[in-house]
Image 1 (cartoon, rainbow, N blue to C red):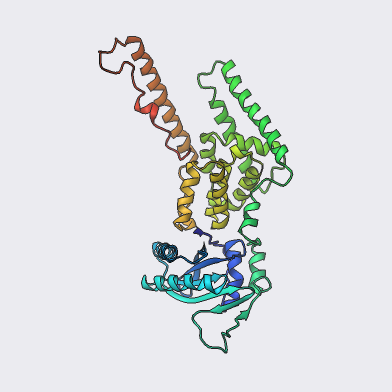
Image 2 (cartoon, rainbow, N blue to C red):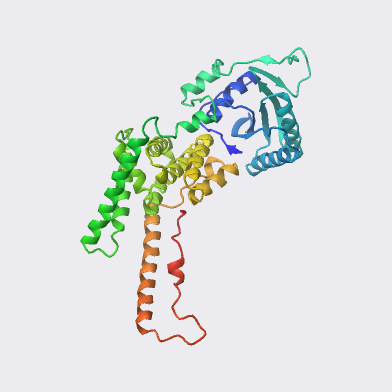
Amino acid sequence: MRNTGKTPKIRLSAGSPEAVLAIVPHLLGFYPERSLVVIGLSGQPSHVSVTFRYDLPDPPDALEIADLAEHGASVLSRQQIHGAVLIGYGPEGIAVPVLDVVMHTLELTGVEVGEVLRADGGRYWSLLCDSPECCPVEGRPYDPGSHPVAAVMSDAGLAVHPDRAALARTLQPRPGTAEQVRQVTDTARLQLSQLVAQGLIAGESQPHLRVARTGRAAVQQAIKMYRAGGTIGRAERLAWLAVLLADLRVRDDAWARMNPSYRHEHCRLWTDVLRAAATEFVPAPASLLAFTAWQSGNGALAACAVDRALEADPDYSMALLLDQALQAGLPPSSARLPMTPAEVAASYGAAAQKRSVSRARSRGKGRKRRPAPKGRAGGPRDSAAQRRAAPQAGR
């Protein structure tokens, strides 16, 4: 399950099944296939609070369907949503068993199910209507792309992709650019090593801090540019940003600057960086994109970005954290900034200071150390400060 609700500030009245079916692709970002879509409704009059989608079990499996139903009920309950519309996309034998179980499960938890639709092959059926006059056995035709509400939502910037795979492809490198991506990434890595070498030549005790300073400055400049409506067109500069973001201090500073007022600009920036990143540098920009897409209410894009991050590094913990949030159906209001940029810098500074003190103490102990008694370990163990990771989420 992915929380795929978008929450744009537009007002539409969907007073018919045709209108609901026309709105759903814009809420998801793509046309669903073999899917269960749950629309959570709240308020008076009802408005869409959350939209999420599941793949239909094929073939139907009772245990999997029960788990799916319980999960959907928990998402709505957690957000105190008491109304829902269910839509099953696919053949009757696959969609109806799921719709039946989910409908009854939601009703048992106090959710009023206002409509249950099945859509397949350009026709839809209502499972709550048995009148042949309005719900004929052969179904009623519908065309989500030509409905008037589709034009309104498209004009509001809620584009629709043919399917989820097409949405995911918008985060992949542009066709035919693989060799260029590798070349500019190799150049960026060389720049990075030269940066550290300059610090060593200058006699700096922590030459790697040059990377953090350079990275923060470069990323902050890029954020400022995109917020002003600009774009980075050069592959070399985008690859440089992707390489710099591999430093958690740089990534976390960028994360702390994801002001939701600029979420659409941030989505543009991290999409551009992600598409220019070599595989080993994908996780950081993909995770930043996932976070700001979640802020925007674009759960489908967030989910695709998380998938890209975890494909590149299954253990990347920022992506795992966001994946858990999306799987739990947490609303965009939960996508709060973890720290301010100043707090991020302070936390890393404190951690570095502790490590420095710990190393100094270890060296001092080493000079004064006496031979260890027989039967005991001879060397000092690493201190807790040395073993402890920095407090930010990271690998």
